[in-house]
Image 1: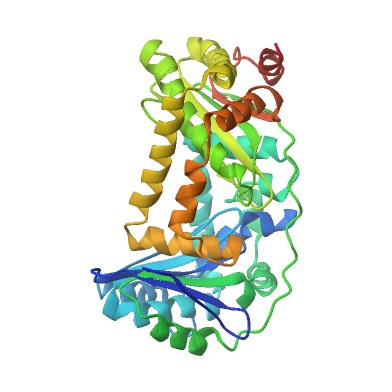
Image 2 (image 1 turned 30 degrees about the horizontal axis):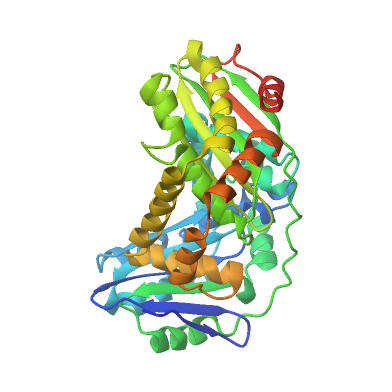
Length: 420
């Protein structure tokens, strides 16, 4: 199973990987335009546009778009992140041409019908309301905002409600014109696929697109700070973020191993100390995320109002302790979890297609899995301790609190504890 890559004369890229034994395929187009490509007055537009892609083209109504895929037993969806918007489908191998035709249609021929836009505006406003009612969801938006204040990377993907209410069809069309060029698009497919067939279709469906000079997103600067929203809830929610390596840095692998050892599973330090030994919470975890030019290691937990102070302080203590006593066993376990998660995830065509698209966007090629595993294996306990020291003491920090958190430690308190 070796990925095959082809680039059309206009810069549109196609990457495929045939997976023997499968009768299905996953395919989609990943567009290098997301939340951080929006100007302040456009916040939420990338996500709005994703919704509108399914609301009718010049040849298919919204119902016909859905029926085209579901009539053959397939599935179609999309998502918007801060650096990409993806439109993808899962179908049987024989229906790959149909799925690709539908994806091309919604990308290139969307009518952006104003009546449908009003309907979808209401859907998105409901989605924003739902996020606000989900504490362990919205708290990460507030954390992101404090980590990268007054920056595209710090803004919510959904956008503020008042901005969504004022968006017009011309705004969506302008965003397409500025960001949806062939150089920004990657067609990725995995499973029961034929590379030559997909390349031939891509040439027909996307080959006449003209270049778009996309303006690079402003460089991100992790600043940090605190967001505290006091509200009567059953639990107090805590999220802490620390500046981490970007995804092109070799140290990104150290960050992933660190997050796994600190709070990546039931055997991790935070889970064992805070949940199993002290019973201070039900959920606690750490994760490492990365972007083009920055990254953030995040710790999240939910607990009772009278325990939020202890939980926050013990979390910082565990981070500081890890800098001096991470063991070889913990290092090996976290690396094994990371490798297993990667390899198990790529057994499915959807995960494989998404990884290929992301790797093409980042590197311009798909790194061999053996090379990735080798980089994970190269992380040492010394690396882990040095990284843990930086996270515990030096890395800029952002803090978000939600719920009955009036008496919780603040950003200054935790910063002082880190420095002590």
